[in-house]
Image (cartoon, rainbow, N blue to C red; front, side):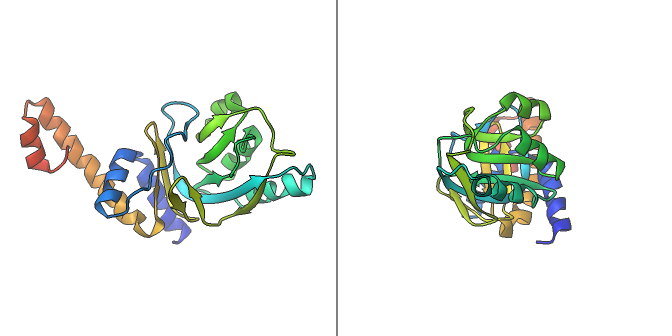
Length: 221
């Protein structure tokens, strides 16, 4: 997908960061199981994240060689582009896989957030930065001597969800959903329609319409 069109879709999706509607639409299309594990939650309740996946794959490591631990990660940060959401499968639960300087760098380069199936640190700084981060846990432990990035922009799996580079990511208070790139435009268009329809349902309910009648009238509830 061309970058210009992708960014337009990201902006449309950002106007409706509603994971419930997205999940329902994916189910209707027969694309089930696109929700990441429930343990992955925003650092701050109310944060939302929308963008295209820049995928990261890592593994535990005992090296303290900067060329092994830090340089690959910094090279990855140098490849961040506008509209990206960094989605990491670290395959590790012993360290923080994201922190303040990572967030500062990614935000400066146009990233819209990060989703980590692992840990983060520098939480207060990330909150002040306003860079949305969704993660499983928090820890002050550094990656040096504990973890390394193996590859980026590769296929990863988080929970039971397979994520390709360029897939669309949307997260809110309810969790994180992955939209395969090939159906992103259709899903986003349907989501816009669903939000409009649900607004009509809400209006009808508040005007005293019976819930069954509202459902029969608009086909959603």
